[in-house]
Length: 218
Image 1 (cartoon, rainbow, N blue to C red):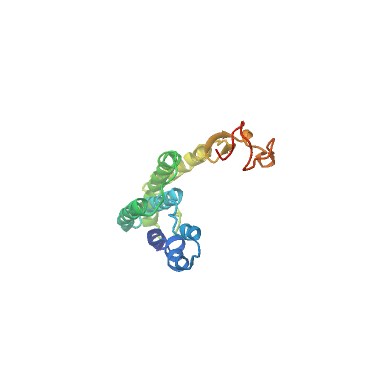
Image 2 (image 1 turned 90 degrees about the vertical axis):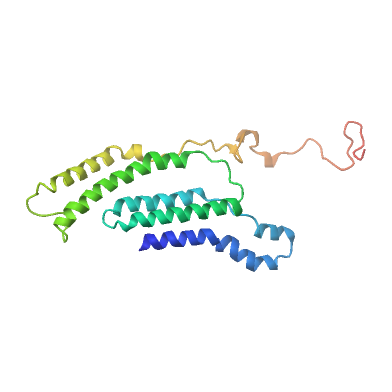
């Protein structure tokens, strides 16, 4: 129930945007005294691609992990993905402002790290549900002599644990070394603007200053 409620609630919030679009425009908009303030209230929100990605990946992993015990999850994730697609498409075309240029880092992590881990989790838990849970419903692990039916499950769980332990560090996503000496995402070294707040021009600029013998008002 909590994942279903979470998916429904997040899509409802994303569609109506009550906290940064609906409520401010309905309540604060008519009370704005300046055009600048009104423009800020009606400013289009930004697309939070990371938040949308993590929501999809979270439910994708949960469905693969628990789908063997509750096959209804496969239908629920299908409906959830369709609704999410249409809500995001509507907001991108009609609500969000133009997003910034993004790299393929998020998609790369999802395809190379999250998806294989989710499939491995699905294989382990599916075999566990169909053997251990069926044979010993009241015990997390069957006590007594290990039957031939449970041996492949235990071997698969051991292999999966070994894979995770051996590849734990490579599986951890490390952020690329970004040069934080870039100013406002432009290729301007920070050394070019370091200490600019203390810069003093060689002479004061005035409205009547003589620029090369020419009158400023000419």
